[in-house]
Image (cartoon, rainbow, N blue to C red; front, side, top):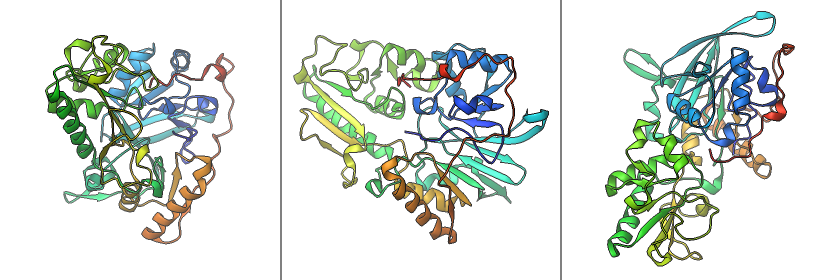
Length: 393
């Protein structure tokens, strides 16, 4: 769960993944992906506001498609940034001072449309990872984070990295690859479905969006679409890479990802399926805290016919180490810091940095700061409207 407050201190006038409070004063805004903890403040009223004051929200094409399925706004208010394509943006701040920055979006490997943002201004380069998972063997493939010299890609160094530290903990040192986890899901599903033609599989996913890689790969392996809820299906139909792997017809498939996690047992969309014919597969890493992740999946000891699979869309401790040591930086700001884990997070970050270049600076404080300025008297917009208790994203 992101604890980042939105403002990039090194570059005035921009906000990322936060759209309430002081962020409303920002001149331009960026959204890394469509998960609710990165969307605080987004609403129809917000989009009316940026349209009125000619501000823009920048995101990937897929993220824009998901936003269009949820909010009402003028298409021109949301600008797409293509992957690995540097984009120069000019905007004004206090006293009409003009700021020129270069922004490059880089695939984050977290969920459809998720990106990292590289911001460059003069001699400052700031990388905001958003939520991300990149296998250490794939770091050299991130073209937008490399220089090209004589046809060779050289890793960039950064003034600062705003880092996804969700699993920066010795409790989560390593994860199996997503391909390994999905193959385990496939094996368990295939074996169950082969035992009885009445059998079905429920995929119990922790969030509405974020498990799409599972859906696509499992659908390919089983030659069977994945049933999702109508509202999710409508969003996926906007994305060509997903639409052919999902369905809203519960009777056309034996794989269901249509249940909310907190709902009661059974398969609500199919009254003809008894509980004895259902297994539930849970892709998650939480049951692997301090456990051997080489055991990719196991049957739950307490819940009947429930199979847990170690699966993560965030980087493990080892993957974070590899990332920071590959892309060197002067400073790191952790974007996910739980109060009871604060000391461990800063200790681990300093340990990782010290292995690269000796004593380092890890930012432990973060305040909402922008150049002092007043909001135009035309603004009839109050931040009390900018709240979201809907976790459907």
